[in-house]
Image (spheres, helix red, strand yellow):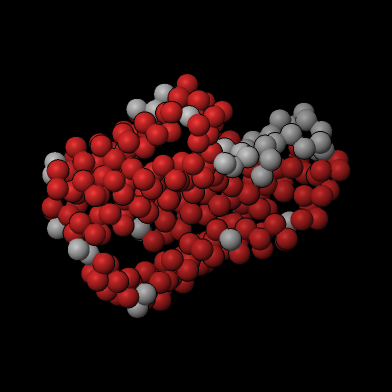
Length: 243
């Protein structure tokens, strides 16, 4: 097991060095401008393969280095074809790179059969299934429910008070706060929920001299209480069912 973990860490280290340390901004711009005609795209992919081989310390594993280098090239080429280089594209790009590394790792440790057995066990584990369903519920349906429940107040605020917050900031704040609250409940850190409420109250405090500030504060308070209440109830249900 230790040897398998070392191999995985070696491959991950090679990737981190290739994509984030040995790739200066001017070379990234060069790739974006010239795409498949950029010489750095090819050099970058070769570096990914060579570093993987270097850290694995076994020349007989040259085919693993070739696999990493070739897949790195085509994943980066796909990314360069996208019109925007936003967070979603970046995350999917990294997901594909990590997936290729994971497949190479499974091949090296001969773990394909073992990983299927682990996945089968996970899908029949009551605790893990309950936790997974819980996090998915607080991230997606809970946010939709809260948005619909507070929609009329949101529209009232937008009419009386010009929108001066970041686009979709409230939605992302809500998602992260529910993830934290559920995590605190599942790890028996109930007291940390109070600190989270206090921290959010300070950060979302409005200037009372500002027009519509009271309505905005009440709207935020309603949404926060609904978000916390849903997550706490769900967290307690998960503890009751799975612990």
